[in-house]
Image (tube, rainbow, N blue to C red):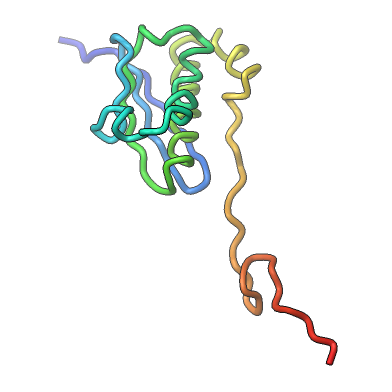
Length: 131
Protein backbone atom coordinates (compact mmCIF):
# COMPACT_ATOMS: atom_id res chain seq x y z
CA UNK A 1 0.00 0.00 0.00
CA UNK A 2 1.37 3.43 -0.98
CA UNK A 3 2.02 6.04 1.66
CA UNK A 4 -0.54 8.86 1.80
CA UNK A 5 0.34 11.90 -0.28
CA UNK A 6 1.79 14.76 1.71
CA UNK A 7 3.57 18.01 0.91
CA UNK A 8 6.38 19.05 3.25
CA UNK A 9 8.11 22.42 3.56
CA UNK A 10 10.18 24.40 6.03
CA UNK A 11 9.46 27.95 7.17
CA UNK A 12 11.84 30.11 9.18
CA UNK A 13 11.51 33.43 11.02
CA UNK A 14 13.94 35.01 13.52
CA UNK A 15 15.25 31.93 15.38
CA UNK A 16 12.13 29.79 14.82
CA UNK A 17 11.93 26.85 12.45
CA UNK A 18 8.63 25.21 11.46
CA UNK A 19 8.44 21.94 9.55
CA UNK A 20 5.04 21.83 7.88
CA UNK A 21 3.25 18.81 6.42
CA UNK A 22 0.09 19.22 4.31
CA UNK A 23 -2.03 16.09 4.03
CA UNK A 24 -5.39 15.68 2.31
CA UNK A 25 -8.06 16.08 4.98
CA UNK A 26 -10.73 18.26 6.51
CA UNK A 27 -8.84 21.39 7.61
CA UNK A 28 -7.48 20.33 11.01
CA UNK A 29 -4.31 22.14 12.16
CA UNK A 30 -2.00 20.48 14.72
CA UNK A 31 1.08 22.25 16.10
CA UNK A 32 3.58 20.24 18.15
CA UNK A 33 0.97 17.48 18.70
CA UNK A 34 -1.54 19.99 20.12
CA UNK A 35 -4.58 21.61 18.53
CA UNK A 36 -3.88 25.06 17.09
CA UNK A 37 -6.36 26.63 19.56
CA UNK A 38 -4.37 25.18 22.44
CA UNK A 39 -0.88 26.04 21.14
CA UNK A 40 -1.77 29.53 19.83
CA UNK A 41 -4.55 30.81 22.13
CA UNK A 42 -4.61 34.28 20.53
CA UNK A 43 -6.90 34.58 17.52
CA UNK A 44 -4.66 36.91 15.47
CA UNK A 45 -1.84 34.32 15.44
CA UNK A 46 -4.21 31.58 14.29
CA UNK A 47 -5.49 33.84 11.48
CA UNK A 48 -1.86 34.63 10.54
CA UNK A 49 -1.06 30.92 10.25
CA UNK A 50 -4.12 30.00 8.17
CA UNK A 51 -3.80 33.01 5.83
CA UNK A 52 -2.10 31.05 2.99
CA UNK A 53 -4.99 28.56 3.08
CA UNK A 54 -7.51 31.45 2.98
CA UNK A 55 -5.74 33.15 0.05
CA UNK A 56 -5.73 29.92 -1.99
CA UNK A 57 -9.19 28.86 -0.70
CA UNK A 58 -7.96 25.41 0.37
CA UNK A 59 -8.97 25.54 4.08
CA UNK A 60 -11.08 22.37 3.97
CA UNK A 61 -8.79 20.41 1.61
CA UNK A 62 -5.80 19.84 3.89
CA UNK A 63 -4.89 18.80 7.40
CA UNK A 64 -1.79 20.68 8.53
CA UNK A 65 0.77 19.11 10.88
CA UNK A 66 3.49 21.42 12.19
CA UNK A 67 6.67 20.80 14.19
CA UNK A 68 7.81 24.21 15.44
CA UNK A 69 10.83 24.94 17.57
CA UNK A 70 13.00 27.86 18.61
CA UNK A 71 12.12 31.47 19.26
CA UNK A 72 8.79 32.63 20.64
CA UNK A 73 5.17 32.25 19.62
CA UNK A 74 5.20 35.11 17.09
CA UNK A 75 8.29 33.78 15.33
CA UNK A 76 6.86 30.27 15.28
CA UNK A 77 3.54 31.53 13.91
CA UNK A 78 5.24 33.44 11.08
CA UNK A 79 7.56 30.52 10.33
CA UNK A 80 4.51 28.25 10.13
CA UNK A 81 2.80 30.67 7.75
CA UNK A 82 5.80 30.61 5.39
CA UNK A 83 6.00 26.80 5.62
CA UNK A 84 2.32 26.42 4.69
CA UNK A 85 2.74 28.81 1.75
CA UNK A 86 5.76 26.85 0.47
CA UNK A 87 3.96 23.52 0.85
CA UNK A 88 0.95 24.88 -1.07
CA UNK A 89 3.26 25.90 -3.91
CA UNK A 90 4.59 22.33 -4.02
CA UNK A 91 0.99 21.12 -4.26
CA UNK A 92 0.07 23.53 -7.06
CA UNK A 93 2.54 25.91 -8.71
CA UNK A 94 -0.36 28.18 -9.80
CA UNK A 95 -0.75 29.27 -6.16
CA UNK A 96 2.60 31.12 -6.36
CA UNK A 97 1.16 34.36 -7.81
CA UNK A 98 -1.72 34.84 -5.33
CA UNK A 99 0.56 33.92 -2.43
CA UNK A 100 3.26 36.30 -3.66
CA UNK A 101 0.68 39.10 -4.13
CA UNK A 102 -0.43 38.56 -0.52
CA UNK A 103 3.21 38.79 0.63
CA UNK A 104 3.35 35.23 1.95
CA UNK A 105 6.27 33.81 -0.08
CA UNK A 106 9.09 36.10 1.06
CA UNK A 107 11.29 34.94 3.94
CA UNK A 108 11.61 37.81 6.45
CA UNK A 109 15.41 38.10 6.94
CA UNK A 110 15.34 40.32 10.04
CA UNK A 111 17.21 38.84 12.98
CA UNK A 112 18.18 40.18 16.38
CA UNK A 113 21.42 42.15 16.17
CA UNK A 114 24.17 40.88 18.45
CA UNK A 115 25.34 42.79 21.51
CA UNK A 116 28.65 44.62 20.98
CA UNK A 117 31.40 44.79 23.61
CA UNK A 118 31.79 48.10 25.43
CA UNK A 119 28.06 48.80 25.11
CA UNK A 120 25.05 47.88 27.21
CA UNK A 121 23.07 46.56 24.19
CA UNK A 122 23.57 46.17 20.43
CA UNK A 123 23.42 49.91 19.63
CA UNK A 124 22.78 51.68 22.92
CA UNK A 125 25.76 53.48 24.45
CA UNK A 126 26.62 54.37 27.99
CA UNK A 127 25.86 57.98 28.95
CA UNK A 128 28.52 60.37 27.65
CA UNK A 129 30.08 62.76 30.14
CA UNK A 130 32.15 65.68 28.94
CA UNK A 131 33.57 66.44 32.41
